[in-house]
Image: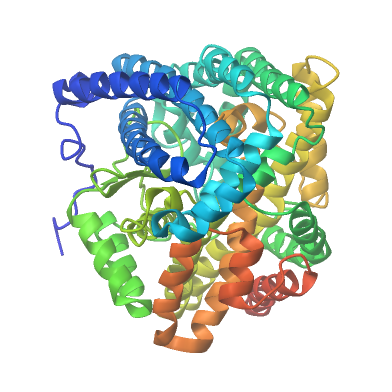
Length: 598
């Protein structure tokens, strides 16, 4: 399969010319004009008071949906430009421009919600039951109506949207700028002096050579300590803006917004974390065994995700992609065909080069009906898992492309379900296909590292962010205090099973600075465990489950997660039973690992 898959993506299929694209400039100009016209229309019209008026008003929904898709297309393109080259200042300018358009569009949404909220109950109910189009998008419309009643009057919400461009989102942009300018000098034990991007150094934190990891982590911590003043300012003021808005809305609970966004109850969240906590001691046994195999008393932070096989062969991008296609196809031919087309059509940016931002993501283009995947592939098993993860995201979007756009707005927690499910398919296949016990252990190790990440690392992020927001209510939080909060959260989340931790993690982790989705953490763990339940059902039912899986994914944007679980899995997420069964599945891998390494 040599030369079948190119590891660089093709963005010209979306807009040719990159950040200098003339067609993109025209697209943005037209988008700006149409958003302003839509805003004027909404400010000049009254909310319908009778069902006859409401039916005539429905065209507003079509215009909203059209603008939402176009704005998403623009954001996705700019996200790709910025990721592939952190020094593309033109892309930064375009991003600021679209952010301003989005602020106006959010004001449009505020007015639209106000219109929906103002429709009398009788007229609203008649509209929902009599009109087939509205009936199909009842869930998002009811959600808009409820949100409008919980927020400030429309005029005040519009002011917040306008101020957020240079306030709330501006602090996030400052963080991106600081990270984009970072280069890190690193004296590699075998390769000598290097100047690396953040993403390149991050890859060395999981190097198979512990000497490399130790030096890389020291350089990593030093680099983020130097950036901590910028990061602390960004995090404090971003959080301050958010808390000020919550105060005006009289929202006392900082989790209200993230729970609403993820369409889940606080009881579900609490039950999930409580259940996980009871199972952590079994994961600690895995950490202890890994420490024994590394010849240390306790693992250091940089050891947790490190491979134990020091002479493992690298997996080429070609081979990794081919393996994913094969395993996807085994579960669901449609899923395998999709992955092959995405890879052949260059939807993936995976080249290992400097100048790229760290991490990985999948973003969708609703007008083009394509996705783009970003990562840095260096040939590790974890890279193969990441590629499978992001292709899972892309597949999720693909099965929703033909339903109303308002029903495609699925939350992060269920988005992580499809991606994590894809990882499970590939991970278990890799374990079964292993030719040696050492290779089998390597793949099992990779799988357990993700379990530790979701049970412990993500929990540490959640604990830190929860406590940080409580501290921020009282004033600015110092760098020292941020380090302390992070250290305390990590020790608690890891059951104090490590020898050293990562106190500047709050600075190095992009997720704390994302303004679109607050608390960019617990949805990962939800998706991981939820996918465990779906995966177990898939193994139980065999090929017949594939169509049910697609049906579940298609429903993710049109119901709360508790209802989704009841409909497709027959479980109650507010009770511990489901979470216990998912945790037991994880711990079976721990038991298997302990047995193989005894």
